[in-house]
Image 1 (cartoon, rainbow, N blue to C red):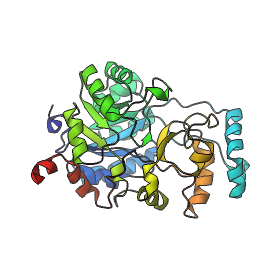
Image 2: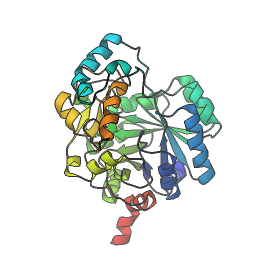
Image 3: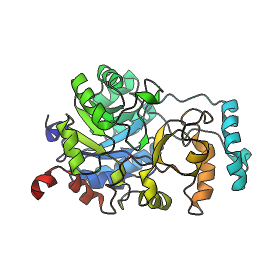
Image 4: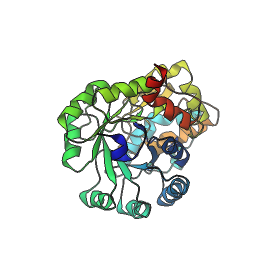
Length: 350
């Protein structure tokens, strides 16, 4: 399948949506360069989404992707929250934080009709999801304006489920990928496998396009993904040092250090497993703990400590999202990086 015919993009590069470290500026740069820029919306209010989409559509006529989470919001559980805050109490004391002053509440909202009302006016051509798919009526709304729907699968079983429930393409997310795992049919992390093991299995199992994600950091990796059946590669970590991102100073410093060679899946920052550079809090109470409440309720309490630490240029309590291969991180424009990631560059260099 030709990626230009299917998604309307010139290059087989999809910029991974990275909530918390980017906005419309990165998405615009990637789309303008010929790839597919993505806007992560899970941490944005409807008004913020409207502002970002206005910026994108007023700047570029190229295709772009908007991304949402599909989790079921959990019920607040005072007992579970108490266990979590007790685990964090030594750090509250260290930073002179009164835990009673920290409000409880979610850090990320799932896709809803209220959000659909906002984005429908912009008719984004591609809408992607993490943790499954939205309810059938929401999916029908998206497809009603002609958008293609992508969603992440971390196993063949999840890929088949997504195909059966209306996804137009599968993002095969390998174990190497930074940020949140897209796992949604199970919480068993032993089911998670690497990108280049997962990709050909999913490509063989489904009859819709497959996109590779996880550990792909350069044009050679993209070419390898295409050779194994992908129509494109979704890349996130390599963009984290680009000036168009909002990556924090402590995060940038970690990405440029030897620390980036040591990552782990951890549930400490949100309640769901996500890959981060290993730091103090991961070493001391993680990486996987039974203490955090359900996603995304774990976020609020640890963010209070993170804010204090980052004010002192300390990354001990920050979610330092990073894939297992940070070698592609470059402090160059996202436009230049997108073009460098294209396999076409390999043909020109021969």
